[in-house]
Amino acid sequence: MDWGLKNRLAQVIPSDGRCFFLPIDHGYFQGPTTRLERPGETIAPLLPYADALFVTRGVLRACVDPQNSVPIILRVSGCTSMVGNDLANEALTTSIEEVIRLNASAVGISVFVGSDHEHETLLNLAELVNECSDYGIPVMAVTAVGRELEQREARYLALACRICAELGASVVKTYWCEKDFDKVVNGCPVPVVMAGGPKCETEREVFEFVHDGLQRGAIGINLGRNVWQHDYPVGMMRGLRAIVHDHATPEQAVDIFEEIKSGKN
Ligand code: 5RP
Image (tube, rainbow, N blue to C red; front, side, top):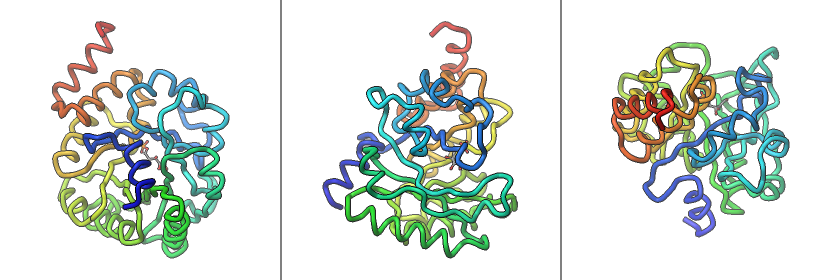
């Protein structure tokens, strides 16, 4: 691996090999997502606990202080919306010059395996890897899932992750699943990080699935709504960070969360 690519990866994945990416890219197709209406205010107390921020160029420029930021993973796919015909019909949104101008440490792109736009979105990934390879910029592939329940199962997730790795992604983001998640990770020759999905009922649920996924081989999380839609987002960040970087158990994470909630920490 080239020095530049290795160095950029090290900016977002610290030396313990684990990572906590904070995604705030949801507006790129959802608009002003609940509690992300003013992204700058949402992330201000959370940034000290994140290894990297996953964000579009628009929100980066408008809402993130360039003098007080964590490393950036730039979302570079989009051009669809919640009210449009097909969320999978994404294109590349951001030139390589812009990625470099914004000093991004990595880029992220969604692929929609099994959708009508499987071919285009996989081609987007392959072309992005080609361009980014010239400049030593790592690509995180985001395996988007539709509403179909089977897309939350290991068989589908393993297929999607492996294809992303084969096309040259440096990191693959996917979803945790209860059954056979280790098969998803073991079938993917590059590191896997887990998204959070819609907000869970309890913080313990989040801590438990993240802990389980890490035990089964994921290197970290790219987890947004379960942090910033929570009433105690700093407590969630601190609890999750302890699981990711300090090998805390879900119970220890709950204790950290409760201490912060009660104002003792
Ligand atoms: C949105 C994304 C998000 O980055 C990803 O889904 C993680 O966020 P969350 O934990 O809220 O699911 O790719 O399209």
